[in-house]
Amino acid sequence: MAAVRRWAQLALTAALVVCALALAVRTLAGPLYFRSPLNVESAIGLAVVLLLLLRATAGQTTSEPAKRRPGGWDAFAILLIVGLIAAVFWRSAGFYFLSDDFILLKQAKSFLYSFRGLFATAGADGSYRPFTHFYMSVAYTWAGTNPMHWHWTELSIHAANSILVFVVARMLGFSRFGAAFAAALFAVHGTRPEAVVWLAGRADLLAAFFVLLGLASFIRFWSGGGAWWFVGSLLSMTLAILSKESAYTFALLLVVFLVSKNAVKTRRALYALIPFLVVTVSLLAWRITILGGLGGYRNQSGHSEALSLSVITVVKALVLRLTAILFFPVNWSHKPNAIFGVIMILYLAGLIWLTRARVRWQALIVPLGFLFVLALPPLPQLLIGADLQKARLLYLPAMGFCLVLATAVEGLKLKSQWVIAIMILTFNIAALFHNLSAWEQAAQKAQAACSLAAACPNKVEVRGLPGSLNGVYFFANGFQECLEMQRNKDASQAFDRSQHPCVLSWDSKTEQLSQLPYDIH
Image 1 (cartoon, rainbow, N blue to C red):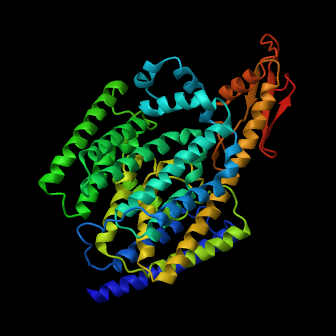
Image 2: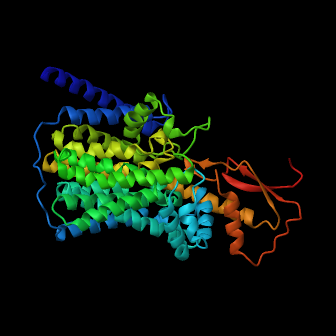
């Protein structure tokens, strides 16, 4: 058996090195032999995970982690995490709205006058998120249509979530260094733009906040806290589910935690889980009543995507695409520069070195369990492409991924821990900057397009407006709402709807709208 394991490790290491070289060439030279690097990225991610599992030891953790009271160094680590978020996201505070944002703002304004509508309204996408609607209506009273106000609000929630990742990691028994690394990676992971910068990702931020808060409260309760911690956890789960349906698997997170403590079969665990299961089932029944069914996105045949999954789709999404996007969160629709290519090479070398880590099986139960449990609700949409669209769905599952890498980093020698952690964080910051640059360009062009259309004193006809730009949502939806919002800012301008409309056409070369004579068809 030991010989088979050694040969498997050698084969996986060889495959990892070959794929790493191929990805390095693809990053530096462009799509010479393969346009999309997703398959190579999947192979690298799988090889890293399998090598960590093959080299894991059978040592057991203690039944309860050592109790650590928060101290000055914990506060310092939290300040560093918040400072890191401010440093990497500050320029995104001025980005203009995109696509669905304009529809959501209009909807938020309407909810100001209909509190009952918050809990009786289903989304056009088959969702039911009353607490998210409530948040939007409250935030609108302050932020209005000011992009900067909205972005700083979303960044604040993201910072709170990153702090909660640190708190949860410490409560799970991670060292201060390991917990800080996991939280920092969660904060700057390359998939963040869609969830943090795009207003349409606010449901993911809210659901993550309440899931993490509820998880921390339950761990505190299980470790000897009072009943109020249990009540707080149950309430947090309820608000998480009412924020987004991705939180319906919260009870399974508790099962994973209890399994790691060898306590899932105890009477205490059973009594603790029953209220969470009852509330989850009750909320699901209410959702079905409101939506007239399970809800969610539907495929081309009109059937629910969640009920139309095949085994191949599940395996491809959970095993291949999940590892590719989490290990390599890069928008390949936006060409990377040479500096990013060099950082990619260093990152690949760091991943190869990371596979030398010695971790315990028991230590991987919670991170891997959290990752796969949190990936279950958005499973029908996890076939994310090279443009990273829908990457917001990985906002919460990334928490499990960050804990996996933190576990591996803690399994290295002390000096190697710092080097590899810095390599991983540097790559993700570079990927984040690369992805944010595409969002910045799209936001600038969206604002220019809306301004040009709003300047027309007549009706507007737009031709060829793209739904996405360099992998970023552009105007698949929301252009009329954007036009309306821009015109409302200039109430002094009169509009004559009886005259010939302004005809605007999208120029794919210059990536901007231009006005055409009316008689051009």
